[in-house]
Length: 387
Image (cartoon, rainbow, N blue to C red; front, side, top):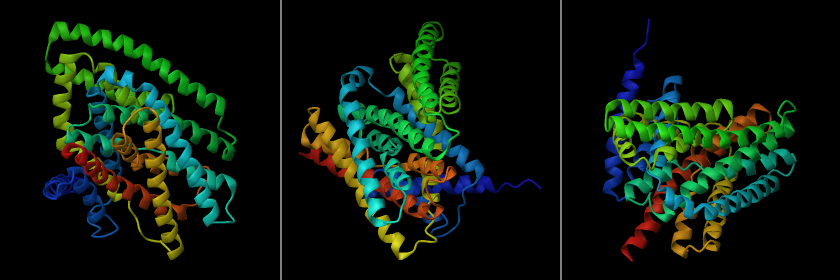
């Protein structure tokens, strides 16, 4: 007999994320903090009301795809061009410092560890999940500014660098992976984005003149987003959220179409898909099997994860001419590891680069960095507003 439990799960998630989101606002925190806490409290670590299912995983994936699509649509292309060099340097330093210090931390704590294991922990810490930051900046009205645009640009470049590092490390643990082939696919992805972007941009310009603001435009826009996400992940080996962001970026200066699509996607995203995505991150928290030694390592890894991104990305921003407060905001904006670090950890587990006993520590770092990022951003950027 077919089960309809998923309907109740969705109802619980939608209602609880909204209630907790409102409570977060009451204490001057972004709503996303409340949505994240829902998954932790109602998940297996505490009340065990919600369980991660295949349906929730796929729905959450659509949620983060739409979130990054909206971020692309909201991007100021001129601002992005002006911050391109800064974003590259920030991403480069923001990858190298976590890679080095994450590897050293693991190696020093577990002295009998293999070199590749230590290096892979560093690779996990290079990951950045900008979706939480995007939502926080959107709530604060700071997504389109130089800080928000630089964070977005840096996160995209960070994602590409992370893929290259992941490929290099996993290829050493899996002889079936060809480094040259994967790097070639990444290069092809950017060629694909340029070609498809040119064609699709022209098509939407024509549709803008011919159809104006008709509902079919929204369907075409969402279909293009999902197509780019699929191609990025399945054909080129790049994260699907990167494809979604570029889909939005391609349409961001088709002004009437962009604003119309964004207004409609906002409704379906924030009413259904995005709350499920944020709650699903909390559901991944499993605290069983945490020994005292592993708890100590988790806390140490958390400190390293936060400081290396803040210092690395903040230093890169400062060297690029940002003032101290903006540099600190950019560094904090890159702290969240989110689902990206979990995906990287899972890839490494498949080729034997990380033991399953390490997953609670990694999940702990992911959850805390995801929770702390919007809180710190609110404090730092709010201080600048009040100054």
